Image (tube, helix red, strand yellow):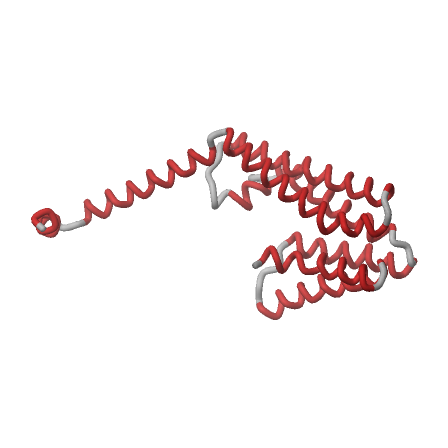
Length: 208
């Protein structure tokens, strides 16, 4: 549900483009990300850093697009966002205690440090490639094709990156190791429960 909500501004942008033009679509996108921010504030929901950054970039580049009547700025927006994410991921490796991928997924799975490093740089590389592809499409194809690419191509690339990550984890045996660890934890919990069971109750259970 959360991922769908974050997808709404892009859907609004594409819909507005096909009903009107790139400038109405840009204004619609700016309004949509603003509504997202207000919704989080009103509901008292913490606003993710990524959402804050997209909000700022959307208003800066969207505002320039509308003010100068030049679509180049809004077309650069996805590239700026992707490259900024790549820089953040790389920077977190060199200047943070844990890289961003580990911070986001560390509570869901346990991996060796080198695996977190591979995932972190893998996603950084993916964001760099996505930024380049956006410019290739924007400067070499029609405006309508670029808008469609934002919706279909961008989403498809994200799913591709996720598939690559899962393949890496599977081939490295990390998914199996995680399952084994969970089983060991469950066994340990059952063992602790048995130890805490009074002897007379254990005998009663065995008799039954």
